[in-house]
Image (cartoon, rainbow, N blue to C red; front, side, top):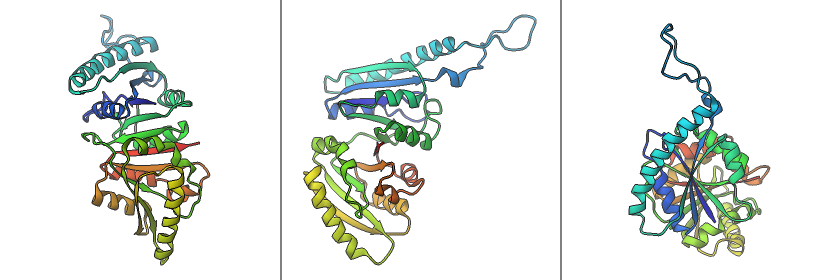
Length: 287
């Protein structure tokens, strides 16, 4: 498998690159730190020098000049971070540092693993250059059909030994969950499977939860599992509160176009959860 860390070296917050390196080490995976420069978004910048007869700035930088300037800055920053982390990681991890000129969407789409699992590691706090907002992060991942760990800044890495997975017990389609079987096999975690009800069908939901887990165990859950039916009118808010109380190592969220499980994720429920929980989120999108 492959771990790709999306560079956040331009962020005002602490970089998540050290966290991503430890994800790569945990999976014993080829690891890449990917810095994406979209020169087209920076066109129109001027040089600092002006001619002696004018008070206006110098000539506009060309797209190539912008890329070369940003590439040199990124190389210096990445070298410092990776050099510092190399002495801390007690594992012979092979790390490739890659700087490309492209849009973030096109680059991530091109790198989604087709023959082997690929997991992206992305900061939950957009850096303002590669990503502009949490909504953009999720939209790019959805378009690419990618699997990503979205990490709050300042979060220290812990093995994924305790995981919360919100699901819809009413759906028999569990195929989307098999995409992350490699995560469960690697960590053999304790898993809380949670669903939300706002009505009087609590006991029925518990029975559906037991049935769901039995089916899941035949497909991808050879580990310790507990089901929880939560009462609440707002799915995202109820799950968020449960996460705050239990402080898992990871929350897994699944999305698929035209899938019944989408019904539990109203328009921006995933975005709400991303914004309001302070634990890493593994978001899995399938086309």
